[in-house]
Amino acid sequence: MQSLNLEDQKIYSTIINISGAQRMLSQRILKLIYEAEDQKISVNKHNKIMAELKSSINRMKNAHNELIEFAKNMDVDDSRGVLSLYFGERKVDKKTKHFLAKAESFVTAHKDDQLYLNDDSHLNYLAYLSDELLVGLDDVVQAFERHAKQENEAYLQTENFLLLLSFLILLLEVLFIFRPMVNQVAKGVDDFEKKNKELLEFTYRISHDLKSPISSSIGVIGIMKDEMDSDWDKEEITHCTGLIESNMIRLKKLIEDILNVTKVSNTEVKKELTSLDDIKANCETLMSAQDVKGGDIDIMWNLGEQKFFAEKFYIAQSLENLLSNAIKYSDLSKNKSWIKVSSKVNKSICTISVEDNGLGISEKHQKDIFKMFNRFHPKVSEGSGLGLYLVKKNIEAVGGQVQYSPAKDGSNFEISFPIK
Image (cartoon, rainbow, N blue to C red):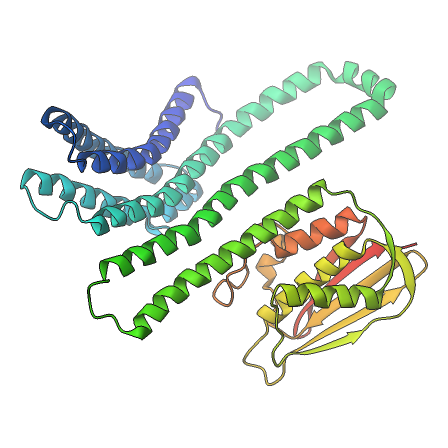
């Protein structure tokens, strides 16, 4: 990979700016359309808005073609990654053209004085297209930024190497004198960067996940309003209200998981005298409160009665999350589904194992099991993607660890934590 010269840097800066501008243009076009629909504005202002709308549509169309042409001329691997966003699963090319076509039809309708312009369903559909497109355009911006970063990496590495070499002797002397301080600062910086990265990801994903059920419910309500005067039967009404209820339940669970994550980060952990039977009872209470039902699943408990000091609530909450997952992702194709909960205790460590014969987790996803917002079976259940992340945070907060291992026929999780 070659280093970037000044001209290359200008090119990549321009491309990244263009891809970022696409996001703003999609929102700008939608805003101008809404403004053009305002019956109270003057004719002059309306004409200015329509002129700006046409200009924005042309700019977005030209920029779209320019970005695709640039992507085709990138390195093979990088080009494949960017073009897959346009023509693969994200379908950014198709969504962009569809969005622009709808916007252009709006301009044509105004020119021909067509009468359907104030129909909210058309504007809502444009807003829906804009939201869908925005997600894909975000990925495109990130893909171009990654490519520019990779192209520049070799140059930066060489520059950093020369800089490090010139200070090597001085650095070694400093390290021997101030090693404890340097290690502490380095760890602090690393922890800060890690938490900052988590916070940015958390904020971005949460804003999208909170918006999704709300937008979906608004869309369903819009359909119901449009059809109020028609002869809707009870089954259609029940279906629509069911969709809204499902979205609200999903939103409620997401908010609860967010509160639990923040609670782990900001609450002091206290040990109390407890036992595995107490933890089991606390876990069953949490499952009942969350309306987690096992149905025909056989849950086999094999826990001891030894008493010890530990953080009961966090451990029970982690166990409840593991059991809830095992129930949600049971394998319906099997004659009998089961979950085995067992434990072993030594003088200072307690280990609880949760094994099931459910769907399991594919090998390609196992390295990401405990990351935020990972859903491994989205077609089976729509969770928040925070459950296993919360288990890890809970157990780490009490000084323990959690491990996953594929079972012979399902999954096996082990949580280990210190006891007194």
